[in-house]
Image (tube, chains in turn orange, brown):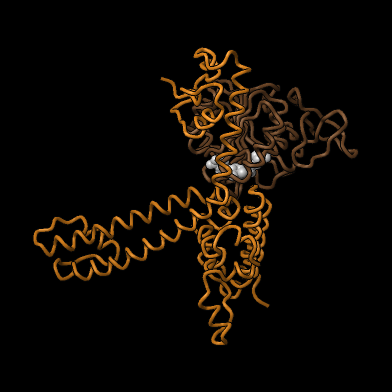
Length: 279
Length: 212
Ligand SMILES: C[S@@+](CC[C@H](N)C(=O)[O-])C[C@H]1O[C@@H](n2cnc3c(N)ncnc32)[C@H](O)[C@@H]1O
């Protein structure tokens, strides 16, 4: 049996060829044009390339239509689920460690403690419950890691510039906080700067606090790795370019190296102030 | 010493300036002339820059090509103008929408919405023993992608690769990044030539290599 995209495909059915292109796989390439002629799928190589062209164009257009606009929804759910899993695992962990402390000597603290408990062999009904409970927490942590891996794989294709600039997880968070890539592309960069700091912003608007300088983008090294007095400038510069990246990703999807280079230069300039000393 | 351009690529004059050009339907608003030739903008194309810089790409015209990181098709459209069957892999859906448009105007360009890190997802489509593997993926792990895709390349085929320093590590010196990528590649490829593409693309290295 061959793994070729045209295996079992009726030459007169372009849709079946497209499905073969989309869903097939092979461990290694082969001389597919020759195989196609030998197997009678086509009469000659030039007919093969015609069929291949129809099938690849149809496969690519169909898949683009399905995935466009849907990838950001998947990222939004995945990043929220990742946060849920993490938060819940921490909650369970607290209970596990506290409970296990009454049954075992020296239980390590935090999530390490949970993994440690989950690996033990229970000998009493109480131990059985706490070990089982710890196992749920560990499963949730593993799920969180899987979700992160999914985001890391998906974000660069859903939003190539944003993912390159912010890193895949922060990119997904920004998309999620804005309510979609299209929304993120439309808000002003000042909003991007404070996304995730809604509480602080609300306090500011009701006169209870100064305006927040950054929201979730604080988790990025460009902001938290810049000395405090220059962080506002770094956050503003970063948010400005993130906004541009989101627009490019939403409207064209092209990867644009210049934008990334400009941001790196800008951050370098801001950080150079620290070396020049303040005047 | 000057290397010959592949058949199907010429230097032509647009607005008083000599530029590379190929013959085909225009794609990205590049200047065209009345004979159907269109300028190939080396500032928007790393392969164009490699040819402008006289690197010995080994391209003669008419070869079978696997192109990784096709984006919306700027460069691969020129490749399909002078090469034979051209497989274009890109994993982001949005640019592939444009790439499909470029493929519709050509009969030898096959767009594939696939991840170049996972060759088994397109090995059932891309034929074995391609003459040339072009890589412009601007992603972390560029050497790994080249190594994983070596299986498609004929023994005497060429890898033409553009390495973007900042994709590997934004903080490192580009030269250090290039050294690392080249030494990773050397496990599987013999490096024939490298050149900085800075005149056209800041912090990019062009590499010509052959499978070991
Ligand atoms: C610098 S751009 C390519 C520009 C294009 N070669 C040109 O000159 O017209 C890099 C492209 O690689 C794509 N890319 C990055 N990682 C990829 C992967 N693992 N598989 C496929 N494409 C990838 C990005 O989506 C982006 O479109």
